[in-house]
Length: 157
Image (cartoon, rainbow, N blue to C red):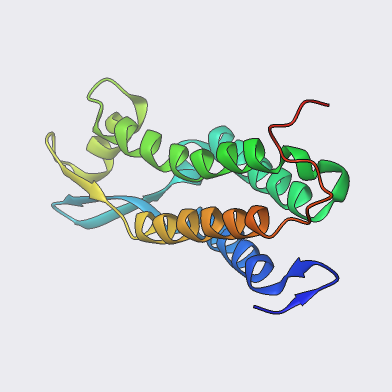
């Protein structure tokens, strides 16, 4: 609850931890496939690298909007985009792994040797839910404790 120069330390810590957790979750398995030779795990980075790079860019934009006063009025739209992008690559990777006509599914079938492998969500999804909740809470707290002389995000320029 301490604030240094108008900055809420708990919100900043929550934002940094949430962004770090979202980036680390990129390297955790988002899809697990049970096959005849064991469990095959795949990360969002392996399945959708460009989508995952867009997620990291959105998180970097969020950190810039949170710390640069010039971008404070864009904090809410950037935060909404970043929170959506935390989940989107993981959801898209899971759907791609389930889609029978995707190249990812063909690779899963080839690697597991099973024509109908059981695909289930991986460990990264739990980390992404925690990261999304932390980022949303931190941005809400930063916005609710904004100085009264700062223009709100919805005010016209």
